[in-house]
Length: 335
Picture 1 (tube, rainbow, N blue to C red):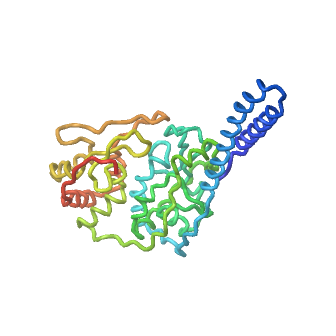
Picture 2: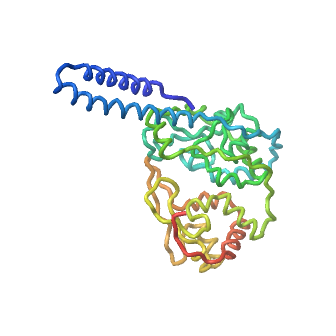
Picture 3: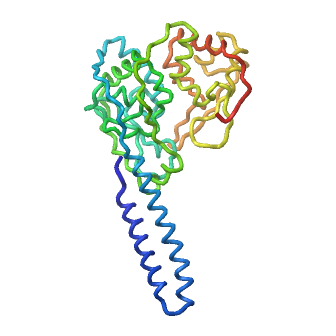
């Protein structure tokens, strides 16, 4: 992760300046100048020193290296794999596409999502013209499931808690599709954090690296177990809670809180469930609210179009069966 040395230099100059002013105040002959000057400039110097220390910790976190092994694998990239990967890639469009289309050419997070001015923060161009052209298939699989960059540092804002559930077959299908996309645009700019970004890392850690995943098998299609697999792969628990009991709106950044699925879905028929994912219309003719991102794009609070594009009818039916099988849980909660 590149460092914005201009912001670091400005911080160090200010630290040296106020340190010098503190020393000058300490050496002043007149008490009326010495003590107020020492207190004022000393407090500023101390504050700047703390900022420098915490910024250094943030920069260290951003560039800390991981030792997750890279699998020695080459994806076959059959037509069936590419087609499957294209379907699954719909869950990536929110972050890796400006227009939410399945050509994953990257996007500017600060412009699109209204992130604080932490520096340069882009999701990479995942087409053959982009940032992964010299990555091995094993390095891509590690990045998708474990959130580790080719150079060993942690990726940022990568939903590995979801993608870590991908089976070997499905993660290889995604790699096959990434290689098969049309080459679009050019590599995105290198991410570069300024001092504010380094401080932000200490308040809201954006790193996502996880321990090695290992081999993951695909559950038998059409079963409730397969439905659970798809619920996990689509990241439903990020919005609906670890037990799908719903999450409270605490006004925090991150995925929007969703309602309690363990009490809502049992009231739906399978046709209600399919209709919702096909049209966005809830039983009773309600619809999902929309949100407007900082870049002006309007998206559904519940991304049903992306989930519909990422799943087959049989997979949606398996998800319905799994959600129907869950015991009712009191909620929502903060988890």
